[in-house]
Structure formats: C-alpha cells, structure tokens
Image 1 (cartoon, helix red, strand yellow):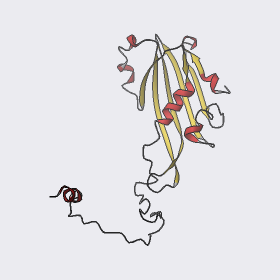
Image 2 (image 1 turned 135 degrees about the vertical axis):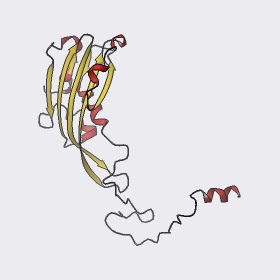
Image 3 (image 1 turned 90 degrees about the vertical axis):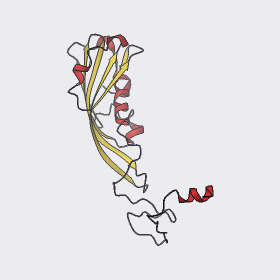
Image 4 (image 1 turned 180 degrees about the horizontal axis):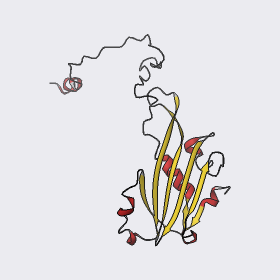
Length: 184
C-alpha cells in the first residue's frame, strides 16, 4: 500500500481469515497522516490485525514510536517513547454489542467501540487517533523539571538565575491575601 487512500477498507470485503498490516516510517504509508503528531521525521511501528465477526470488524494493534514535545515548564524540546496495545471494534449497528465483554477481559491496552455510518474503515484514522491519545496534556521533560524563572525567564534546570526570590512562608495560609481583600 502506498497512500493513505488505500488504507480504507470496505466492511464487507474483509476476508474471514482477517488481514495483517505492518507500517513504519520506512514503508511510509502513514507518514502524511501522522505528520501533525510526529513531525517531519517520524519514528513509529504499527502492527495491526483486522478480523471480521458477524456484524463487527475488530482492529487489534500494537503501536510503538517516539513523540516529540515541548516541556510545559521549561519550554525545551524533548522526545519520549510510547508503546501501546489497542483494540477498536467497528459495528454496523448498536444492537449487536451483547456478549462483547467476554472477548476483551484479557486485553492489556485501550479498547474502543466505533459505530460505522458508512461502509468503510479508515485504518489511517484509527492509527492517528491511537497515537494522538498518547500525547500528554502537560508534557514534562522530567518530573524534577524546575521550569523557568518567573522574573528573567532563565531555564532553572541549566543554572541558578541571579534574580532575588522572596521566600514563601510555609506557615502562612495561601489564602491569607484573600482574607485581606475581604477585610478580615
């Protein structure tokens, strides 16, 4: 497969034995689709198995790769590795969900239900969604990141700045200023 448009599969055309797909930055099928998440030089590996069963198609996969972030404390670029297993079941109808919990009890990873409005499953969109879910809300280069000085903007992980910082009295309530404003 050479383009993202080839990654759309018709629900009823998936063979009973299923289909297997292996994607990586070297094969390039998903590079354009994942550009907004992984950038110009993506690093990823996706192994996907698609299997039909009655009125559903199960997409089971493993994703590994590297995400590039900007630290929310110090604004430095950094990379982090990710690895996740996922299962997405595509249903033609909401009526056919009974008995599904037995097949997902042993799954280690994320599990999604998707209801098809049309007749196609877009594998590129499924992988994109799973990678996007790995992006942290507030990425940190390390848990110990000291961030930037609020006065001069120096990266406190690299050096101590020369700004004078007021010591915070631990005994004083953080709401003391509010009491002053309220007149108490």
